[in-house]
Length: 395
Image (cartoon, rainbow, N blue to C red; front, side, top):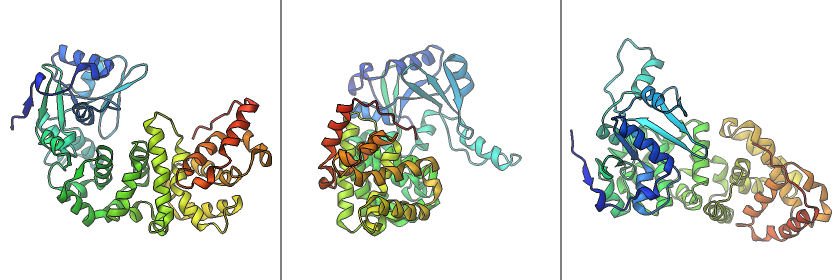
């Protein structure tokens, strides 16, 4: 077993004041019951960098049932990878048990049982660290003595501002091609360089992303577009050649000014996300389709946009986004040209259930297509004047 590199309490900038009070409660209860209790992953990385973490993940040597017994406000989730969610009023703290990578499942287990067994082989902190993706995500904060433990060189890579894969980049990408997206997203968000070997592995194996399920790609897309750094990520997707394998409908516009306008719109999204705005999923996904739909339309009118979106959605697999979103995305696309006219020409649009999402969509599009925003102020004034109570449709 390798001894970790340990930073004692006074040798790192992490303070309990920067940690969620709910996470502190979970850590201390586990510790007082005799279990190891660490913060892990991205929250430790961000605390060291002086960034406010989005969430706090806890890892322990307590098994899921033991954790569940300690916290009445908890539930075990996951079939293949069992975790415990501890539910507080405004926060959910995710608690995992240290995992290891076993050699093989017992031969007597059926395939489904074997997958569960492999994903729930419990281990040590060191074994858990080497299962993680990037070195900067392989750091642990020990509540017992407030020290930071590093088994994988994450502290050195934080200083070097480097995104480095734990283990061989080629093998780790082939194990899970989504790691390519995560590497680019993390690099963009932290403004870190990507390890050269990792970048070359991404270029060599970019086509492997096609093996990822569409639903998982949607999940990663939503994480990226809510990260506050989606514009540089989509610039990376074009640079690495990943774009056509993930979003083939964007390939025809990737080398046109429309893609630069699309990136400018994403920049507007990033700004609003950083300011704390909440944007609905159909608005964000509709924005992704907008440049391709606009290019495919015969003219920028509502009916042409509707027909173009029908054609593009038919080519794209239905599983990429929930089927229920399709109608709302088309409504947003076809409302866009109507919002380019003064309100008195399309008054009834303000009565539609999707109207406020349509305004959000048009405002974000205006980040890349400034000429499209000339009447948005009039629409906002019109709505305030009528003192409408808008109803946002749940996707």
